[in-house]
Each structure stands twice: as C-alpha cells, then as structure tokens.
Image (tube, rainbow, N blue to C red; front, side):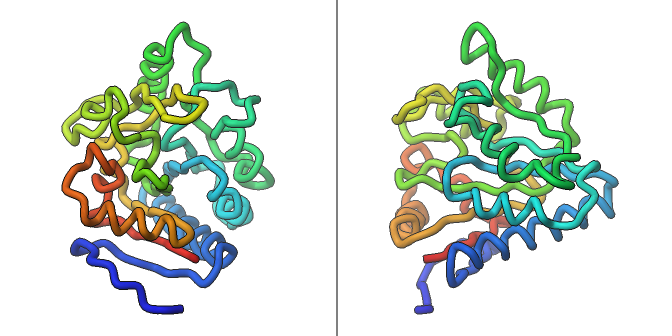
Length: 238
C-alpha cells in the first residue's frame, strides 16, 4: 500500500488497513481490548458506536469478541428520530449486528423516544445518557463526505451549541440534509471526553474529506475537525 502523506496533529494516530475486512476485524479486536481494560480497571465499560452502512462488518466482528458483555453498556453516537423497527434506525442496526450471541447480554441505551417533539425526545435521551457510567470508555465515530460526524452536520441549526466544548448538554436535536432529517446526536463535549476515540473511514473519497478537514479552519463547516486531535486514532482502508 502506498504511503499516505497526512499532516496529522500531535498525538493523533493513523492506521491503514489493506481491506474493509481487515479493518473490521482489526478495529473490533482493538475495541474489545480497550473494553477488557476498562472492565479490569473499573468493573464496567461504556461503548458508543455509530450507525450507517460502513460499520456493519465491524459490529459483526465485535459481537464475536470474547469479553464479559454483561458488564458492558452500549449506546449510540447519534440516531435518526425513527422507531427501532424502521430500516433507518441505528438502534435496529446495532441490535441486528452487534447485540447477539454473548453480546446480547450487554445493556443497550438507545437515543430514540416516541415523544411529542424532537426537542422532547432529546431531553429524555439526555437524562438517560446521564445515568450511564460516564465518561464513554470507547467511542467509534464515522465521517460523511461533507465532513459531518455523529449527526453534527455542517450548517445544521443548533450546530454551534452541539459543538460547544463547554456545553452541559449530553444529547441534542439535530437535522440532516438527507431523509430522515430529524436526528439526535451526542454533544461534542460528551464525545470528546471519551477515554478512547476511534474514527473509521473507507475509500479515497473519505480520505480526501479527511485531508480537507485537516486543512480547514472552521469546525462549523467541517464538524469532524473538532475531533481531529489527541487521543484520536484514525483507521482507514481503501
């Protein structure tokens, strides 16, 4: 594999995997190792994962990792405001591909709630996230071609509050440019406090987006830039 020249900030680590299969397996092994370390040190572990199509192979691989899942809590970095039965639900994705076999013993805390409004649903999720053993032990983020991560979209209403590093909010309403537009997202303040932070991306298009985010000087235009700092570890494959 050709050497990739990236001007990464100090402390940000880079791993290039040879294929999506290798990335999924390698990332799952690293996440499981970090969860075991958290269990050994604190007796419990909190994992936050992202949705979409790309994480499916990783979630499948992670579900087969041997660890005491009964002491692991799992939540989402973001969610579409749709019921778990909806095909766009990140919670449904996690239940199908991660929470099965021994991993079904994990405690799952989703973000979706059938409330009267998106704001009310975010407030309920905020309270429930606050009952988890924070901070997050292991966070796995993805990134869109527009530079969004979680559901922190460029030019989205409420983005300045969601990206405020001093915000006391844990979960906020968010709006995506694509259907379903109504989303729920964990805040930058909560995500950036995670002990282990991983960003998984695939393909030359995402690599180009990453380079643009590294060169950008505006987190509002490229929200993923807010996380491109230590202790982030970036995992890429062609």
